[in-house]
Image (cartoon, rainbow, N blue to C red; front, side, top):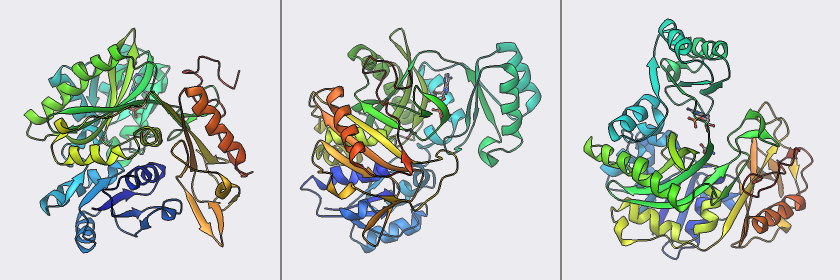
Length: 427
Ligand code: AMP
Ligand code: GLY
């Protein structure tokens, strides 16, 4: 079959790598893709948030199956347009994608479904929001209601900090995305990500992961898109996973179906776990980046069969086959990230790294000019490895990092420290 993947980061490189291992895949196009993806698949320039353009491109290229990587095309209705055109697609409708694109919507669905999450209220005016903050006290969490490129969440340690965040957001810090804010209870505990596929009715777990959002070792410094991840997440024991499914994910899927907007695709539940009890922090309607890289490393070729069964509404036909393995990805970023950084520095040593089913360097933001790899983004490489234990996966990933000669890049040396039971590299 001919497959089109939409997106151009490390997540899509990992998806392409897994899909290509499956003999069902005859031809693969990734749009827009990136220089690393171009080593294994055709890349095409395409306006992926324009539904009509995606449908036309898929028709012209005899595409049988479209896998949507990021949330922006889903919010724009690409999955709806493909469905209308009779083209099979993996990814929810725009209405179902509101589980990521609107915090208020998610909270309302959780309340209707009885899914445990932080107590919350929505505000469009500063004064009532201030009263709420003073009444509930700090720490307290302020969120832009809409998509704000991962920057619309402030975990405020003081009431003053929370009030400043509300004022900034309601005065347009994130444009229309912060015309309303959600203020919610601070939840203590350990965070983990839980990934399931749903065909609208059934739910199939496809893995757990933990990531490191802060740029600095010891989980310090500014937030980033993610500096590394590992799978599975030890905190997601069998009992916690069962509770997350029965108390949070399954009631959400049932509520979406009841509303006439069934959820089809991958649902990424960000959870806070305290004393064995999971609560929902947020949903995303796509694979995480870089969490997808560790999930694909563990799932391999079967990922395509699972995504196909999901899109075709026959999840009861399939099961995920798990090896008793662990995977880790270490993000290499350009100096300065997540602040301003330079593009164009040379990255050497990449072509000498042997890649196999346990060792892969996924590219998030590279360019290839005159036979040389160059940095072309903030997060640039996702150095990913698999092993029988997390220690082995970690050692393999950092051995690859050490073989990469990129003086203008950096990574955290302590990815996985919590799960590895040690202290962070910053200690
Ligand atoms: P979100 O974009 O909703 O995932 O929020 C980003 C991060 O903020 C999460 O990964 C958590 O670390 C933190 N966070 C969000 N909501 C809460 C909450 N209610 N309590 C504690 N931490 C939170
Ligand atoms: N790594 C977090 C995300 O993809 O949202």
